[in-house]
Amino acid sequence: MANESVSIHGIWSSRWVFILAATGSAVGLGNIWKFPYMAGAYGGGAFVLVYLVCIALIGLPIMLAETVLGRRGRQSPVNTLRSLAVQSGASPRWSWAATMGMTAALLILSFYSVVAGWSLDYIIGMGRGEFAGIDGAGAGARFDSMTADPWRLTLWHTLFMLVTGYIIAKGVVAGLERSLRIMMPLLFVLLVVLLGYSLTTGYFMQGVQFLFHFDLSQARAGILAAMGHAFFTLSIGVGSIMVFGSYMPKKSSIGGTVLTVALLDTVVALTAGLALFPIVFAAGLEPSAGPGLMFVTLPIAFGNVMAGQVFGVIFFVLVAIAAWSSAISMLEPAVAFWIERSGKSRARITAVIASICWVVGLGSALSFNVLADAKFFVVDADGWRLFAWGAEGGKTFFDTVDYVTSRIMLPLGGLLFALFAGWVLGRDVFKAELGLKYPRLFPVVYWLLRYVAPVGVAIVFVTELYN
Ligand code: TRP
Image (cartoon, rainbow, N blue to C red; front, side, top):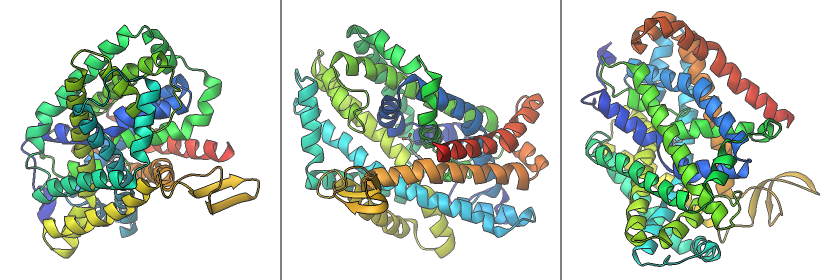
């Protein structure tokens, strides 16, 4: 086959670039913004425990599978699955798993861009010194007044999407390597600085306690949430990692690489949690405050330390960069697919797809203000309804897109990728492509992929149905 060793979209200079790109994809708002507020909403330790177990037993094997499939197929995820299925004598309909994934990635990008836009707003706020000496109430009011303004949210969402599209139009390889090599380590250093601040609040142990003391009786309620977040944070189940795998050089080993990425991702999330929660408790905030948690908590830290204004600007710049390096991985599977399919230029295709995401994202931006009363999946005294205006319960557009992608589409996509790699691709192909440094481990890895990961996802789905 002509495309056996090279992708038409380019190839990375080394395994390192894959690690950078995959880490750039994995580490993002999911670690710094979403992980803490999810842990806060689902009771802390119980959520963290299930999340870690899901990363190790379900996430890692699926991430391996995606990388293997991508490098073997050397095309966009949809065409990779189609051609590998045909080569293996299976139905080309397997590609539907990647079509669903591609759609999920674009849906995620639509609201991700809105939240990333908040961090752009906070760069300006920090620079202006809006947070000097601020307390919990002041920081909360600042967040609320930002989200209440539809124009402001739309402006930042637009800017974020434009830059994302620009990077993708230039091609994933150019530029990415240079920026990530410096920015990602710097982000981590600043998180550690924040951790230092948390140590001075006098509430550090309370934060540790909250994140790591688990009460198993509580674990059940958040189990699907935790598994969904494990997928989200590793960027798996949609083809993001697969498309990056397709640009990976032939000779590099996949096993160690994927493990590195997952470890880095987990360390960043736990560090962010440990930095955030002591500040939450010290300021008397609620851990269950929801999506605003990080945006209310961090200004308190930066607003009350020496040179906090400077650190605050740098921090939110780094958050925005981490978000961009994640956002491009959501756009790339669809762009690569349409380039293969239509042969049109990367720039034109990017413009069209990013515009569609931008429009859908408007729904999320407006769900914090003018569309706040538009509720989906409502359960109340009148029974269950898909949509109701002004209902008490239910989910806003933003919540709905997040819910449907993270809790249904990602795990389902990941399940199908694992089944494909484990049961369709063939053991020898998988083994050769994986190229483990310690071949004795192969049976364990293969067993995790074929049985543990798919059964794990299925169990979580079934448990949730009974809850
Ligand atoms: N993992 C990223 C984060 O934690 C987000 C992300 C990038 C993602 N690509 C993805 C999530 C694909 C789901 C699917 O911020």
